Image 1 (cartoon, rainbow, N blue to C red):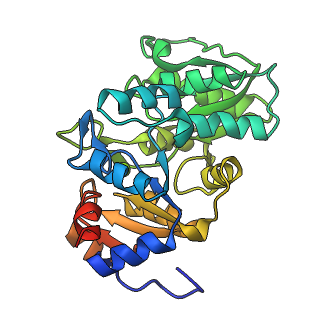
Image 2: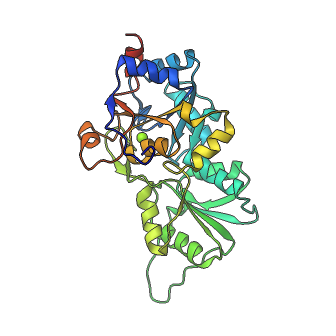
Image 3: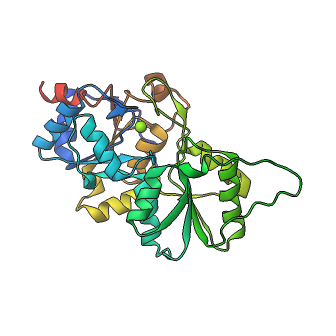
Length: 306
Ligand SMILES: [Mg+2]
């Protein structure tokens, strides 16, 4: 939506619109899963595309809702895939969750319960907070026997829920008790993606499914720090000297990436190399229209050379 009017249907990127897009932006924000890689496989032409944009003087920022890794771990993943990306250019929802606590003066005396993986625990540690739960609690089982009483730590002041391949009933109860019984306990979601390409071959349930389980139990809505929430963008703007009107968000999801771009005033480019298909984009029930769409980021190289 712009000026209260619905956006016109997305237009296929052409050589002319690619050139004017490049002229009108100083920075590109890239989603990662489905744009840069699928699981652990790099999408074709990504290194050439990033090189071209860097050579044209564009600032590149990588914004992922996947909280399984920290910024440091993502930087290593880029390197392993043959792409040089600095830690400072990466904004993950795990980092955003830790920064949310920091910016809101969360007391380092309080603990953070994590339904999620190492990425969140590492970002909490780096920000000076004590997190626990995570993969370790994935090994804990519950037996619902008569008179069983579940103890939880009363000093937990925030629960962060993100993508968690070790998700179980123990964690659901731990998180629920903290949110329900610890006065003022924050309920933070890294994101609410329903699905994601966790492997290169399939879609899997996203962090939104774990968030929904906890949210249903406590009957409360979480604070979302990843896309499409503007928290990440506000933080990003503070970190770099950028203007959202001179930025382009490139993503494969309408409900997170493109909505995030539109919510924050960026230009938007949908790539069809991830979860969104052309029929889904063009379906009458879809109300999220990016400015442009194209098959993959590599198209930029071809179009700009025409
Ligand atoms: Mg994606």
